[in-house]
Structures are given as structure tokens and as C-alpha cells.
Amino acid sequence: MIHSDEKSLPEKLSDGIVKYILKEQLQPGDRLPNESVLAEQLGAGRSSVREAIKLLASRNIVTVRQGSGTYVSARPGVVEDPLGFTFIQDKRKLAEDLLEIRFLLEPAIAAWAAAYATEEEIGRIRKLCDETEQLLKAGKDHTEKDVEFHTAISMSSKNLVVPRLTPVIHSAVPLFIDLTKSALRRETIDTHREITEAIAAHDAVRAQDAMYLHLVYNRRLIRTADTLHSGDSL
Image (tube, rainbow, N blue to C red; front, side, top):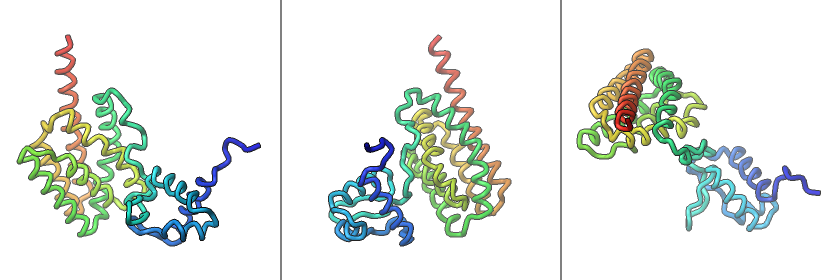
């Protein structure tokens, strides 16, 4: 009798491909051997290898580019919506709760970035700060650049766990922007700039305080919106 927890052949092969990636120290963006080579190395048929690759793609470990090949994903194993926030109906409550989690994490992350960011990383953070500010001043959608700004700070923290938390933490950014219709333009510009300059100065306390203030503005607007929403419903 086959036990329900026994792995299928494609699952076993996907484990083998992961071991190959680790053994060969392949980096994000590196190309894997083609199906024929993998099949030979793993002692399996090409169709089984193809199914294994599909499993790995569903876990965001590899990316399949039609006509080009299979590559290690940009963030291997980190899916875009790991906790299923897409299916939570109450987006306002979700935004509030995500903000509380950001209060716990992001001030410390900003402090780590100030302590450990390289000059190249500081340059990227500054560039994203400038681009976000330009979009805000022009009244254009700044969501993507805002997410990239916060992600760049996380990546500069030198903490191996933090970058893997960013899909969770920064689900809040586009959600908040959508709910508030970018009402905090001036505050976002000012606090982003203060965070950036604190990191550039390698001032951990200042960076932590600036990130905290950034989140305080966000929370205040959410609570104001909640009060107005409650009043409208009376």
C-alpha cells in the first residue's frame, strides 16, 4: 500500500533539482541545464523532469522562459502572496493589521540598513527615493517605486530572513495607497527623504525614528479614514 505522505516521482525529482541548484551554487537568474541533461543526471524520463520543473515553478524556485530555458527565480522559493492576503475580503482591516506588523519590523530594518548598507545600496535607495518623489509630485502612480524603495532598504539590512518577509510586509504598500488615494504625498516625500538621508549617514537611531514616523503618518490617516467611514454609516 502506498502511504498518502509518500512523494510522487516528480516531487522526488524536484528535490533532486533543488539539490543540484545548491550543489552548483546557482544564483538568481542562472540558467539550468535543459530537460535532456537533467533527465540524464537524475535518471528519469523527460516528461517526469518536465513535471518536476512545473512544481518548482509553482513554488517560485525556477522560472520557465518559453524558447529560452529554465532559470533560477529572482527570489527562489519566495512566492508573491505566501499568506493568501488576496482572499481576505476586509481590505481596510487587513491594511490596519499589516501596518501593525510593519511597526514591529520596519524601524529595526531601517536601523540595520543604516548600519550595514554599502555605498552602492545607498545609491539605489536614494535613486528610488528620488523617483518616488517625482511621481508623487506629478500626481502619477508611485506604487511600484514605493514598494521598490522599501524592498531596497530591506535588502540592505544584511539579515537573511528580512528579504523573505518583504512579500508579507510590503503587501501593505499598494493596499494602503489604494485605500487612501495617495493622500499622504507631502508626508511620504518628507519621511522617505529623511529615511534615505539617515541611512546614507549610517545613523541607525535616526533611520529607525524616521521609519517609525513614516508609519505613524500612515496609521493616522487610516484611523481618520475609519472615523469618517463610521460617521458616514450612521
